[in-house]
Image (tube, rainbow, N blue to C red; front, side, top):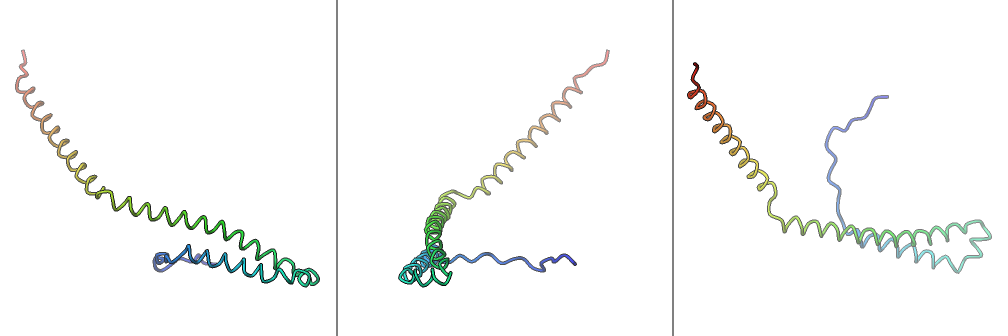
Length: 125
């Protein structure tokens, strides 16, 4: 079987109202759990009790999801604010590299002139 290779780049992921989506899903799981709770006996008699516990687990895991996405959203906003507050670091890095290259060039030129002067003063006996 031939290896599949993509023919184009993958699109950027979409960002939507993640916190609202997870919160809505968590509420839905708990509503389904509460709606099925009065029929506990019916589910138990037919072997479908796992439906009830699946809804409860979905709601519980949804709480963890809400906590996670709220922290993620806050971290994304914090990183964006820090990036906006910092000046352009690439420009500073380029300027520092240019200054370093100029200093190296000046040092090389100075070393060459020093070597030439030393050769001029060298006298053979």
